Length: 416
Image (cartoon, rainbow, N blue to C red; front, side, top):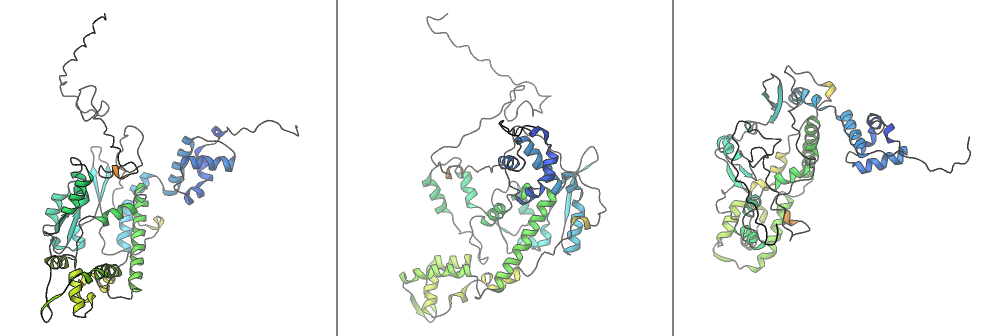
């Protein structure tokens, strides 16, 4: 035995550790820190076990740990019908439909989750406003399913298409200034010209939708359930008869009413601007001109608000709740064929996790003067067609396109 060691300690024994062993011993830490990066995981293993591991080992460890925590992908799709039955049991009156596509091998593969418009009781869309962004083919479907709905287009996405050919800050300001509400239906108390609710919900589920199917559905359900309780509790503690945000907006209008002179004809009849009348019937909120007239009569401006901004309407919207659901070990088996996950196709290059920014948002970053890089169009090296490469070519029966040969460059004088 050598009592005094002068040699350096060697940490390069990561090849002796398997990913299964790492996942089993670090599963609690991965549950506690699900967003741990591979570099952080490498440092954590080195600090805890004094062993250097590679990024590949950490990647397999994390995948194995998530599989142990959430289960395999096949198990999620196999329990999909069981989960639908549990939803129907715990929340009577709900509708759950699972669509599958039958393939030539007679196996059922999961396709999509359906939510029926009939469950909303909209009756063709009367009295509703739908704002679409990039509807991606849903425009014609909305015309058929909701023929009487008022269908608006999101101004921000209109500008996104406008910006592809017309770039510039001045044109951007002119487009937003030209956004009009002249054709909005009166009485809906909705003045929105962009779909902010959709964008805020998408930003909330941006991390949830990366998870396996049942885990994703469970976390969205828990979020909506907690959101309903929070808003119902907030409404119960509200001391005003109207929504506080609307009252704050009316106060902003009230600060400017000192600049307007009220012209009285008789009694409670006033001459007002057409802008006030149009804004009032579209938004349901008295503007600065209307509040000046209301203040002249010494009445409460909140009495002229639309009923959709009253407290009792807000409370009524959140009187319903989502009942809790049992764990997966208590679900009753459904009498349906178990679904399989959709067929996956390996995409070229490494998968991207960063959000693909729209063309209208590219120059809103910290480099506003830098033009976005335009990717080149791929071309098949076999049939010389644009839009696909040799690996994804499906035109085996097509004839080869004729490509004229390149002309040889003339040699310079003095060169042989």
